[in-house]
Amino acid sequence: MSDASAPLTPPPPGFAPTPSRGRKFTLHNGPTFRASDPGDLRTGLWVLDRHCNGMGFLHGGMICAFADSALAWAVWSETGKMSVTIKLNMEFMDIVKEGCWLEAHPHVTLIDGDLVHVSARLMKDDGSIAARADAIFRTLRRKA
Image 1 (cartoon, rainbow, N blue to C red):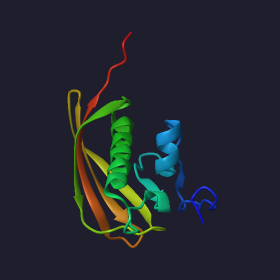
Image 2 (cartoon, helix red, strand yellow):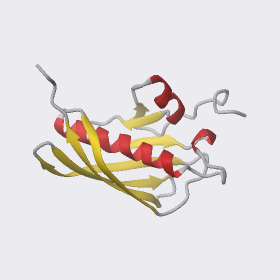
Image 3 (tube, one colour):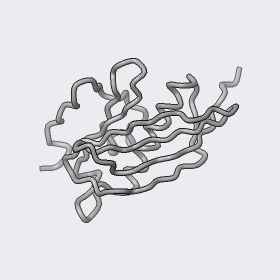
């Protein structure tokens, strides 16, 4: 059964769908979910067939895109500003199979002017770490 016709599995309790931010990218790389409690910065994803590589597990590029989005959400939550990724480092620790619930647990480690350092553990539903992400974002100022 293709992803388009498969029923969407609800997220675990305490998560709600992430609002869409771009029709094509979000459509193909989502859906993602955010924790609904104030101050809880977790982002989640059900790993679908379309997220997987030819070997049947989560594609490295997809986990990078998921981590980048979750880290940017943490930056927004801490600063109230949009941002762009300056640097993203990933450490892949385990494969993530189709059907797995994956959670990003981000936290801001340093705000230095317009630069925001943030990191995250990407946790599988069995509690093991699939990857770690460390990034630097530059916040953007709106022009008057």
